[in-house]
Length: 145
Image (cartoon, rainbow, N blue to C red; front, side, top):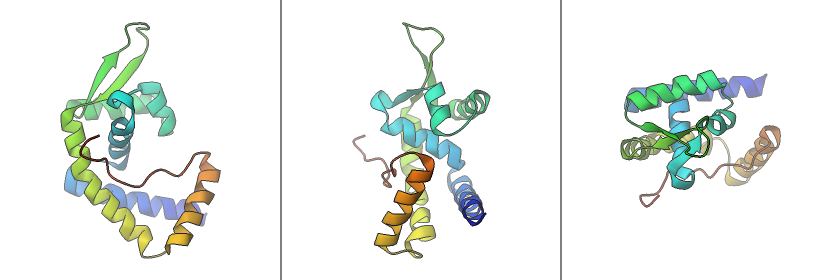
């Protein structure tokens, strides 16, 4: 239960700050970040949903908002019309770079002052075992992609 409470508290704090300063939710930020790191800044909608642990309809709603804001475009696949890609726009990349400064400063505030470097490495390793993935690189996207 402590892990769930800690996650909920951190998510609330990150959401509030991103929304207040940039008009984004943590989920919006995660979509933009994943697209920025993807080849050609695009991913299949279904893959994004899987990575963010969202349903197909939840992902569609999230992408609808990002598309209305001009941060994401939808792209098709000529080989398979059923496939829908989310494609990061220049406006989306600019918004991500702006919001990343806030986000990563806040993550550092949340965790950096509470744990030393060794403890953070251990925590990342333990959480990755629970989540079944490697720890993510914790850095904003660079200016050159």
